[in-house]
Image (cartoon, rainbow, N blue to C red):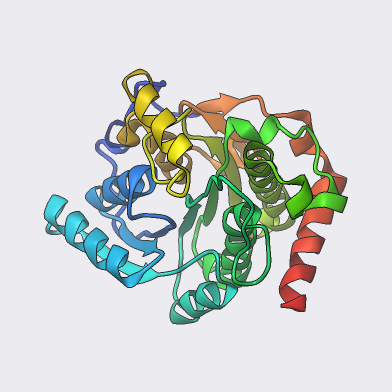
Length: 300
């Protein structure tokens, strides 16, 4: 990339943002109360951005605001309640931001569900939280994004987007009788990837840059909050994987470095371009997912 320092798998979000001045930029970070999301919000606020940190509950929002301001007392931080498992909650959040310029949305929040469950609107919860809620958020705030001089959408996907290798639209999201924790997570992460590519394809000519990324494997986070097995696995691998601050590095890299042609529609890992699965380049699947997602929203 042009004029971009060399970062790697050991780089932290603070390393990536060192000497950057993000004053004047307004950046939304979903799932900002813990793990990668918190470190993403904190490091961006430290670099001068106005950060809108979203959390699932009032209690989590209040705690997050206190922690962020303790870490950086002079920073410009706002918190808001937004539960991605509720389309009403996402819509309420968006209404609060109506007609306000947004420079970047980092779709960070995610979920690994140990068993089948549904969102308040009847979606299998992994795809409902990871994809459907974020789809509504970004689509609703597109007018605000497109008023920014160089708007970006950063989707936190995963290497798990490779399994399943293709979206089975007849089982999207997985019904209860076909549900598997890791397949549902992979399905949701592939949706994130296809959404980013399709978003860039549709709106690049209006100045928007959209990309997707892998933050690291088993990074300390709250993504397995509903699964004792996932929490145990993450504790066991913690000494061998990235810290949350390192896990946030690629998110803030994609939000702040590079030009549109270098980022748009591409996949990143360890703060560098990476090779995604072949399915992410499937324009028919990307378009179909977009249209199906719009249909879901209209039906509800």
